[in-house]
Image 1 (cartoon, rainbow, N blue to C red):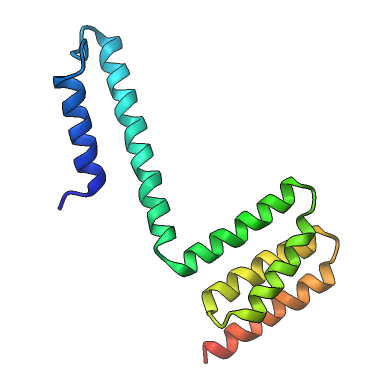
Image 2 (cartoon, helix red, strand yellow):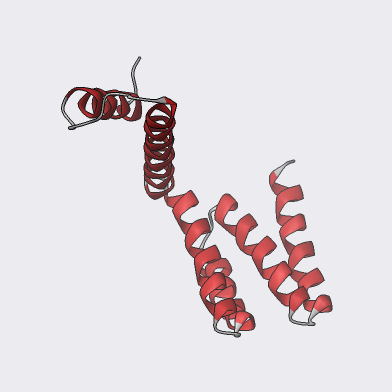
Length: 135
């Protein structure tokens, strides 16, 4: 079964070879340039598919959003401010996957902020939840 990406790359390559002026390979350099273009297009469509995959799944999207929030705060030199966001996620969500990600991100943030004891408390709390769920 052909994927959207495969079809799009094939169409793009066909157009490049058939329609674009001067697109026919005249030398090894031309072939390398075309291969580079096709590689870039392949990478681009993989990014689109990955973004679609994450965006279509609420759990994956929530985890990505938590990471992005942490990233923005870190770039601003305020990474510790993401602690309150992650704590709110734990207060608001019953989803095991989202909670696990929040516990891990929270543990890392607290540890990096010099609050190792608090990090251990949250990580142990997450561990306890997982052990209970695994019974």
